[in-house]
Image 1 (cartoon, rainbow, N blue to C red):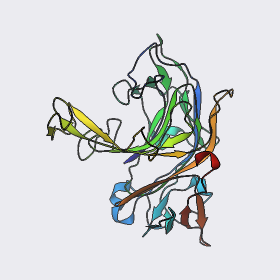
Image 2 (image 1 turned 30 degrees about the vertical axis):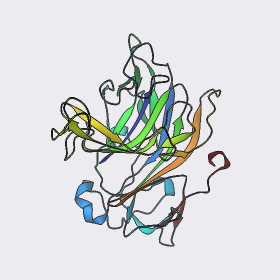
Image 3 (image 1 turned 90 degrees about the vertical axis):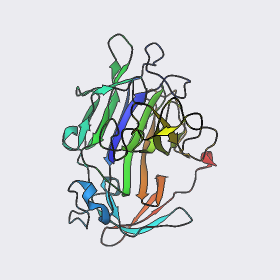
Image 4 (image 1 turned 120 degrees about the vertical axis):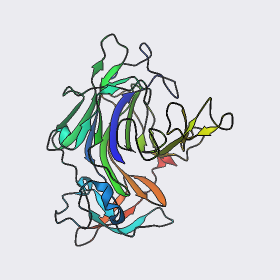
Length: 313
């Protein structure tokens, strides 16, 4: 899977917005990504496209600038992860975005159905001060969409520990997201295009929500509706498909508290937070601002959940 990040806008008060002119809120917002990190287990080194897996000689600079590799990790009942992790990949934000990412240029009308028109004009995606910035910049001509930024890593990864340090904009119906998607913008994978080959959402948050959502998406081919009202088909999700998701707005099992949102601020956003995903063949775990511990050799040896704040209890 490839790492992807985007800044979109959703229609107000709509669970699944359609692309559409007058309903889109105008919002100028920026997400600053200080690190976008990924890794894979040694058994799956062929998926990394040349990234080093067995202990990099390059020293760690800081916990927020590392991509790490799990070697025999163990998730404890407390939610802590205990294992030595070796550096696999560090994304370099001192270069133009195109050095590490494909900057996407397309409408979101028939993808996640937001109001976004993703561009690469130097305004919506840029690097500055060793950070990657995505921006909702302006209304499209005619006002039917909003020009925004979306990127996807050039390298692909399978399994490991992924960390993102990001300052995420809020309010104005913006829809920031950090996720893993197969191959390309269409999610082409072994089982077909999106959603048949899956998606892992580390973060999705909309408007004034005080929480982020962790979500797994899959799908299946279908003709004339979704099961049980229609038969499943092996069409690799073309042309018709149905989606399956762990997201359920009727409960809070899929979300984690980040911080209270103040939409009265001049430029509403969360503070910078660390988002961490552990992806192994038999487990998927995500944390917000966990405590990272290192040994004398500089290896990350544990990921421990931070105590829940009072606002989240």
